Length: 202
Image 1: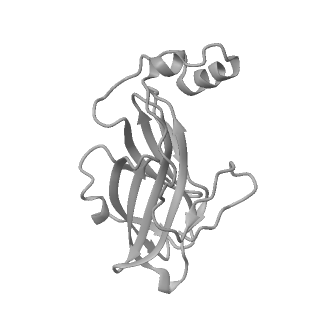
Image 2 (image 1 turned 30 degrees about the vertical axis):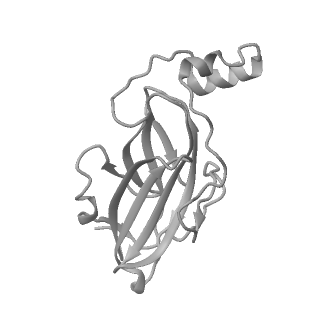
């Protein structure tokens, strides 16, 4: 996870901030309001009405699975030239770090997050992670996911293309601690997973 961002034909994405601590916010959070109030607000402003329809859709009849407002369903490790690995984040996630994903050194990849927003608009979703090897922090990054309205369907965020380290000294097992949170410091999920950098795919 070197921070290299591939240009060219890849869809444009905002690069993650690297080498920084967990994000903090120095401004007050916006006031929360229910969907009906939000939809009725500024009803005479055509541009705002169109914006809210694009964000919320035309109905407030969304699937509510219970639990938190934001449900992180899965994380996908997606190499550019190799099959993807999907990690289910809805069940027992305690064993993920004990089952490393085997990856070839120097591989270019993305991380995809599949999630649902259930009830209220969520502002400033972020994906923050720290990478460690043998107990020593070697990398960390903060990706801005964005603000989302409720939807029954899963939504997908993907990071820019990144590149794993290469060379004999870089081979080994890396532990990643991920956190999915918002501007209000609501933590929707914390999880650990791991990958094993090897000379070739196994």
